[in-house]
Structures are given as structure tokens and as C-alpha cells.
Image 1 (spheres, rainbow, N blue to C red):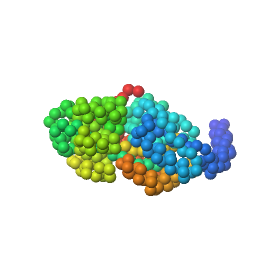
Image 2 (cartoon, helix red, strand yellow; image 1 turned 135 degrees about the vertical axis):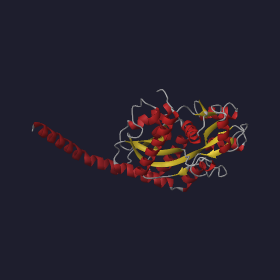
Image 3 (spheres, rainbow, N blue to C red; image 1 turned 135 degrees about the horizontal axis):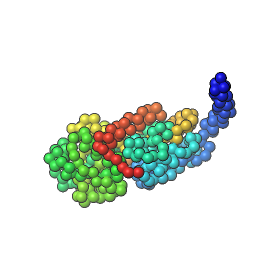
Image 4 (cartoon, rainbow, N blue to C red; image 1 turned 90 degrees about the vertical axis):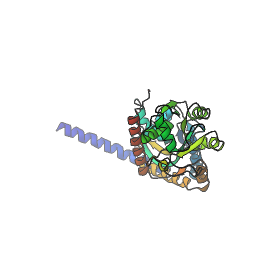
Length: 330
């Protein structure tokens, strides 16, 4: 009897607290945004996460008549900046520009994270996604995906691919490619994409899954040969390059994607307002043109759709990590 009474008392206290705070929560949502909004970009300036964050923040600032700023917090494959947002107040003033590395791959790669890359966030909207391009050194005797696969099967464990570090998107793209093609290729990790591209151009590695915009000048200049795009459809910035799926590996699909997330517990009214502002910004002709020029496919989906997309991406990469036996010390 005493236990039941104590439970009832605790329940009454919690209800009183909730109803006491409810008007404050409603008022905070109604006033949102009342101060500067921060979008944390968990990678260095100049990369895809940074560029898309700034394009979006600039348009949202104008629409909201409130400053939206981008803060770069790189380190630990995006984990440092992501952790900052996970542990921030759930009030809508600190947001994350997440991507596949931080919110889909990290959970399978890093075993000692102090936060959960999926459960500790409230997805708001997938902003855009950009395919990578499979490029090879010009001297390699392969001008198509089929020829590259045949070459790899003829020379098992001899062909090499670069990556921007263990567990990075280019690494997982190559691992997924190798699994689907049933080939054995050797990964060479680098501290970023730039040195990997430099060594590919120099002939020290054989292939790389590169950011399409970073690679295009070298493709056009003849320093690299493009074999295929990793997306489901051909890219607007390179319509003559086929997809991997149409080149003999049906179902292959891999993107660099970018989406806005808030800390778990952010009020639904604030989530909805941010979502509406993102969709409004993405419908702007100038912003859409800028994203097109980045090779991006504009999305702007709902919080529920983005949450489901992250879930499926996390499952896909967990399978790749397991089957490819990928691990990293942290």
C-alpha cells in the first residue's frame, strides 16, 4: 500500500512539474527564434558539409529575420562536432548538419562514443545528397566498371583504392563496391581526400571514390578517368558518366548526404518550424541553383522520412562494416 501511495505521489509531482512548465514550453516555441541559431558543421571549412550548411544558413537568416550561423567543429571523423549538438540544450538553437559519416556510419565503426548517433537526435530534414564518382588513374587498363572488376579478379589483392581514413564515406563506398562485385582490393587510408587524390593522380594508388566536384577538374584535364557515379541516377554535372548500378552492379547506391538534426527532446513545434523554414529555403531559385552547381540532389523531406532514411542507411553501413570486417581504434 505504501509503495502504491509513493508512486501516486511521485506521479502527481511529475504532473505538477509538467503542467507548470507547459506554458513556458509553449511560449518558447511561439517566440522561436528569439536569438541566434547555430548550425554545427562537424567537418572543416570548404567541404560539402560546410558549403551546404552555409548556403542553407544564409537563406534561413533572411527568411527568419534572425541570424543563423555556421560553426565548424571538426575532428575525430565528425564525432567532436556531433557530440556538441547531442549534449546541447534541446531548444532549437543548436543544430547539426549531419551526414552519413556522423549519423549512419559512426555507430558501427566507433565503439566508445559518449552519445548515440541516431537515438540522441531528432531528425528534421534531409537537405540534399551528392553522389561520388569512381575515378581511376589514366594508365590503368580499364575504361569501364566491368573492365575494372575483371582486372581486379585477374589480380586479386593487387589493385589499391584510397580512402579519406578508415570508416570514411569513400572507404565504405569502396568496401560496398568490392562486396557487390566480389573482388579483393586493398584499401590505403589517407588523412583526407586531397592527399588521396594527389596520390591517385601520381599513380601511387589505382582508384578512389571522390567527391564529384573535387574530381571534375582532373577528369576534364585528363589526369583522372571517371568510370561511374555512385548515385541511383546520373548526375546533372556529369550526365555522360554512367552509374555503377547501370554498369553491371544493380542496386549499388551510395551518397554523401546532408541533413539537419536537433538534440533529442527538442519540442515538436520547434522541429516543425525549422522543417518548414528548411523546405522554404530549398524552394528558393537561387539556392536551388547553387546546390545544383554542387552536384546536389535537393530533398527537403519530413522528419519522419528523414528518420527512416537514417535508419536504413545505418543498417546498410552496419552490414558493410560487418561483412568487410572494418574496425577502427578510438
